[in-house]
Length: 225
Image (cartoon, rainbow, N blue to C red; front, side, top):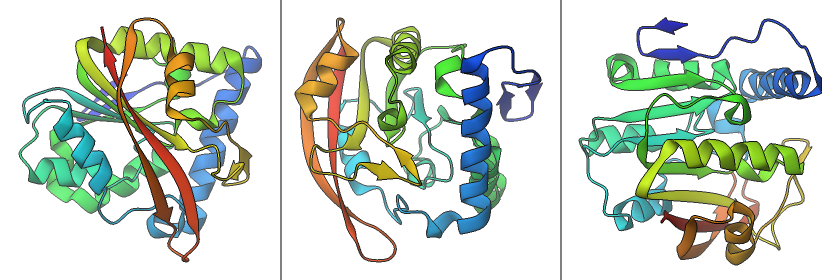
């Protein structure tokens, strides 16, 4: 179903366990944003400096298609729009998170393709030069979920393109927003993503939450070969 600036993956029935998990994730993240607000969640960043730095390192430019996976209400899209990026997409399972970002952007929201979907059940309709994911992949704790994610990554990312995937580091939290996570070192993440990708770089990052605690992340830059 297409609407202006939106691609919506409708979920009208729950025929199996995977679909039930998808609906559960949607409800969980909608509740998180509606109860805590944009700046009340642990992953809030005023300015996503490291993500912007790694995007620059890919060699992609403002006309390159870029998708932010699990982007929700993240402010990376604001920063990229200010830098003149013209082919941006944001995918998130939470409509509430996306509506928060749209309200913040105002008229500029029409410049972005908004996709309401669980990435593990999404069908990409185009290819991208940059795939950015800050803290979505580490919530996929089951092998089948990770395999579905990687399948979408392979379908969506153009040869020579780059994936920036940030997860909790091995010494990072074991849970986030009440959910278990899978922690990764850069090479472990690269091995999980598998064939067809090479680890082009990594960064360790200590994120400070809105209430002053710290979380250890690792950002991996993977090139599609």
